Image (tube, rainbow, N blue to C red; front, side, top):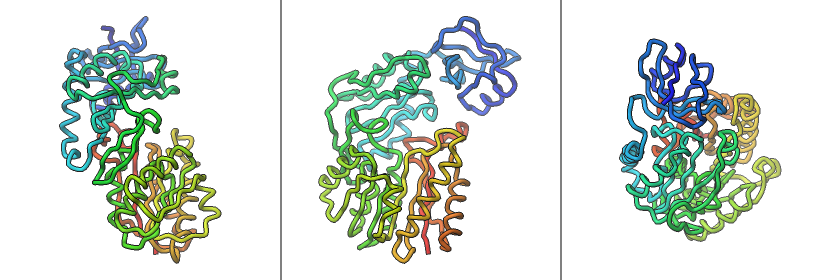
Length: 388
């Protein structure tokens, strides 16, 4: 196994258990190293700092698998998967579907594993972790004995990392649709066709939080609805009418199926751009949910994302009954902080001459762990506010 020697900044980073090393944090780079291969990591003074995999093509040059010297084999992955499952035990009381492995936050960088009932959706996002695909699949089968495993791919990421990826069944048989249960609400999930690994499991806790503020007779607007989770929760909590808005035809079809599955009445589905919908909308609501895709995938896109969120919040305030009511607004981009969301809400308050009271701070659910040592692990942030 070849050696990587880190400089002072790399050493400090690893001392805080941050598992990412960039090229400028490496003092001595091994010669003729194979992309995706394992390397031992050392300080300038010769102190062993762990084992990771290396990829000179990647912006993140080394990702740490262990901060100790240990064998990276099937037993390593069995240990990590069992530890991750233990963290999620209490979720089994409210759902049959959750994320098992959330990449670095569960000590297996580059790997995503979601469980939908007794089926798994897996995604290998780095060359280094893709090299352990067989061991990881074997470990998952040994621990969970799933009826089927489906591999999802991010082709853009795979190309950057330097490996080929194909979406396919890699074990057993996975049905076209699976009915999952979450807080006694049913959702149809298509692992094969759905976004990411199938369903936005990270918003589970927030769907419940927002629904707790719904009063009988509320009219609710669910923007960027995806599968309709927030709106369906609202209906179950007593809303008299829900409008769903999503630009994706596939998402709108999914909303229709989920409404029927839960016997939801009095709803409208608009296959439209959320910005255009707000621009021409004449209806009034008591609660509006704004849950857009990541507007800022890079730091350069941050200001544009803030402006987009400002537009959505300002026009959502105007769409509230007498410009008073509740708004839940989210950002799923690591680059948008709570400070930026504060700025969005303050600017919207100034523009609409409305006072905004924060009722809830919201984050991703516990199956998408937030690890303080890994700043990028906190990506989903949200506010539930009262406008008056």
